[in-house]
Image (cartoon, rainbow, N blue to C red):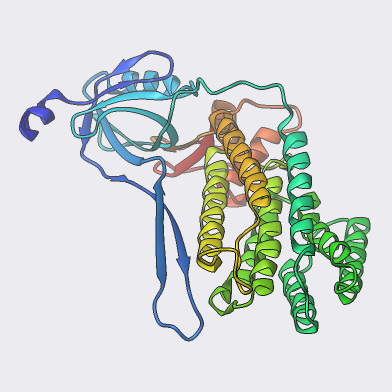
Amino acid sequence: MSWIEKIKEGIKITTGDGEIYEPLYILSSKSIDYNVAEFNFPNVNGTLVKVGNKRGTRHSLRIIFQGEDHLDVSDRFEKSCLDKRPWTISHPFYGQLLVQKTSLQFNPEGLNTMVITGEFIETITDDYPKTSIDPKDFAQQQAIDTASVNAESFSEAELTPSDINELGNDVNDLNDAFGTPDISESAFNEFINDFNDTKTKILDAAEEPLAAANAIVSYISAVARFEVPIAIRLQILLEQFQKLSFGISLLETPTEKKKYETLAGSVFTTMANTAVNPTDSDYKTITEVTSVIDQLVDVNNTYIANLNALQTINGGDINSYVPNFTFANNLSILFNFVLSHLFVIAIDAQQKRVVTLTEDSNVILLAHRYYGLTVDDSTIERFMNQNNIGINEIMNIEKGREIIYYV
């Protein structure tokens, strides 16, 4: 079939509630993201890039409802969008698509037209395995088991005085990445005590390597328990991971490589565990969830690529290095479980909507329209925060203003 014939077929959208819409459309792009790891080496120009598997394809969509009844149709379409089940789109260029919407923007352009712009991610069906396992409990136990194997693996390394000194410097660098977390005084004191205990045990690492390793992984894992938003905790851990990975090309001895495997692996273990321990303010929107998914996938790919680069051809030579299989397997189980749970969270998370006001309004009317009113005015406050509404807009929000809300 020629492209001309395909265009004539038009586009058909079946929303989650089973309603079918055949709007006009404007050809738009799709992006295919790959799991990519980037390596920057000191004193070397350029970046080494490793490309892995493809992720879910992302689509932009721009559709148009036009005619005398375009407002009625667009209102019906907006109600259909409240259903969180995936859409089926028959696209003249991209074929049959099963997608989950992440954001929609409604914009009345002219007197006879409603233009709707959206972002979508291709998804699999939601017939995923159901489980009664509490994800927090499973992830926490899996993280503990993974950390235990990690520490035991490191305790088998032969540490020289130079290795012990470098290990102490690495822990100092990790501590610098923490900054001053906004946590309770008791939690902060416990965190400082863990740091001091870790430094003490590192000094005795030659005689008690397992005690030192356990102290290090316990100290790193403390971030997962901080009562701050996930984005802040993951940013701390990401900075730690980047510090550890920066000098990856300079690691030569088996002990140096094992040290990286242990410390960076402990950071990544903590990131995975953190991702399923949200505060009440986390994961309100699907964008927040997919952002965490992307971050975990990126770190996982970089970590695996780094270990592959450090690994020697075989494990029989005196200077050979091969990552610990049991630790890698446990970490893989944790990572894949967390990832699957985050996708489940994303299905139920709120989706962003953007509308352009066709007439003047105010915060009370708009908060009532999109969220309903409450006795404590919490929905009004929520609406104002989401739209950065200051005192000058409380009584009057002018026509043409873009308004954000979530469903």
